[in-house]
Image (cartoon, rainbow, N blue to C red; front, side):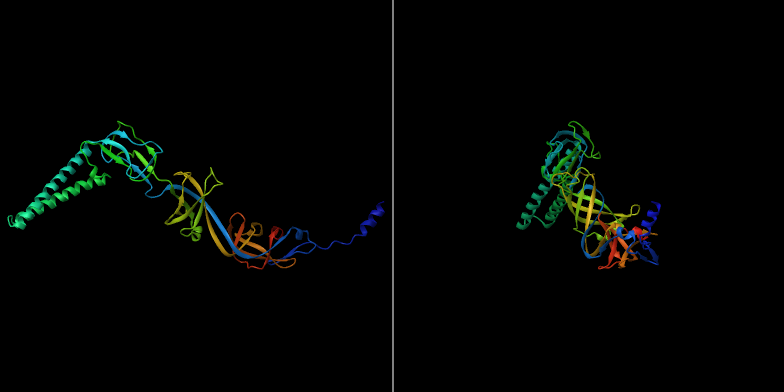
Length: 356
């Protein structure tokens, strides 16, 4: 039996050498090597691809779409016209305040208005008398000067009321101060308590916001700024509803870089009709870029050595040359080759690790 075993073994032909070897950057793989079965090849082509990168952002109200309202005068709240979540138009009454300080300003305005009316009548009378030759030019000039002075005083007292966001035409000594909304929107915060004494330098009592359109402020790293342009379309993802991204457009790219994070604020204008995006909410922002005539390869085809990226190009069957390349990430699908590789080449897309 032992003799038969030796005879059977003797009938087999010697196996050919299957070892791979390297000369410089060239790797030779014999056809019989088991390594050949582990290599997958890919023909390199160029084309147009849509790339994207993601970063974090925070939801903020548009400029002019949020107003924090306080009382312009010290006083006591005597009436509230609003409730939380209520929709209001611009100029809608929010609350009433009984204020002696306000009434003093109204009194000064009404007094100045009355003096202006009297001076205006006197000026008209002096002008008529001057034209009839009854009055002198000096008397007319004095009446004119008096009118100019009262007119300026009237404008000054009216301006004080306007600065306080009050309409001088609504001034009335027997009515309390009505504080109105400066914008249209929704009551998102209210601290009103009827009977409460308030101060003009106190915290805001009512916050009105129009959140139908908002800003998403994203922090974009320095290396990604070159791919951004105004009006580029952007997608915004939230943790609570990741399958329904909101869409927006870049409206402003900041000019100041954060020295610590090496990032720039990018403002994205976004429609928010259902108010799902809340002010202060953290979101994930995805920026898109169209790449023309670009080469995309699989991540498995690129290897690393001493901080350099390289891949293997097939020179001929069984012969592979190591090529240094510059790559950047391409979505979650592969890598973009920026230099070191041309279309038409055949590369090792998988198994390159066996050629090291």
